[in-house]
Length: 356
Image 1 (cartoon, rainbow, N blue to C red):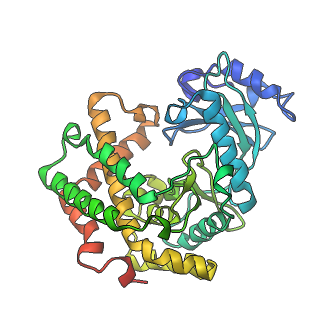
Image 2 (tube, rainbow, N blue to C red):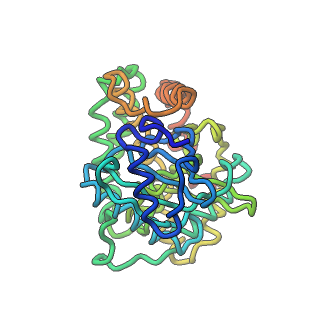
C-alpha cells in the first residue's frame, strides 16, 4: 500500500514519488504495493521501504537550512558519496529530483539491516565507526562544497548556542535551569576567546551522533544512517554527542545512563585506533568540546521547547509515543538538579581528562 502524503511527508504526493522512483535504474518495475512507510522517529525525513529492492526512500519534509530544494538534495547526496569509502554508511542508489508532487525530492539509499546499539556494551562499535569516518582524508578547501566547512568550529558552535539560548524565556525554563545555562555560556565565551582556531583537527563529521542514529548489523558493525547534518568540522563534537546524557537519551531504544567509566572506554577505543599524530592533536580538545557540545544540546532543547509551547515545533510529525518520550526527556534534561549532576563532570570531577 502506498502511504498517504501525511505518512511519507506532509507535502509529498505518493504517486509522484513512485513515478520519480520508476525513472531510476533498477526501479522501473516498482509498484504501489512495494511502499511501506516506516515509523516516524526523526524530524527531518520520512522513510519508506521499497520492497524487493533493498532500498529506502528518504523523503525530506522541508528544504534543509533554507537551501533551494535541489541544492539541499545535492548537499545530502554529496555527504553520502563522500562518506561511502568508510564502509559505515548506507550507499546512495539514486535521487528523485524535486518537482510537482515531490517538492523536496528524495534520496534512494541502501536499507541497512540492524538494530539500535545496546548500551553501554556496544559503545566500542560506535567508536570504531566514528574512527572509520574521521579517518577519511580531509579534501582541499576548494573541493569541500557543497558541504558546509567550519573554519572555526568553536566560534560556529558558540554562535549556534547564542541563537538557541535566545529562546530560553519562551521555553519557560526554571530559574535554576536558566542560571546554569547562562553560567555555561559565560564559560563558552571565555573559552572561545582563547581557543586556537588552527589547533583543533578537522574532518568530515556527522554532528548528530546520538546513538539512535547508529544501527548494529549481524556482523557487529555499527553503521551510521542519518547523514543530512554532516559538515567539515570538529570530530571532538561527534565523540561528545555520542556519549553525553542529553543525546544518549533522545532515542528510547538507547536511553541509558552511561557511567564515566563507559564514556572513557569509548574515548580510549577511538584514540587507540587513531593515527598517532591525529590522536595527539585531538586529545586536548576532547574535554572542552564535550562541555561545549552539552551546552549546544541543552540550548537546542530550549528552542524546541519554546516552539512546542508556541505550537510550531515539527515534533508533531513524530509517532505519539516517540514524541512523548522526547518531550519528557527534554524536561528531564532541563531539571535544575539533573543539570547540576551533568555539569559535575567538569566542575567537580575534573572533566573527561580525569577518566582517560
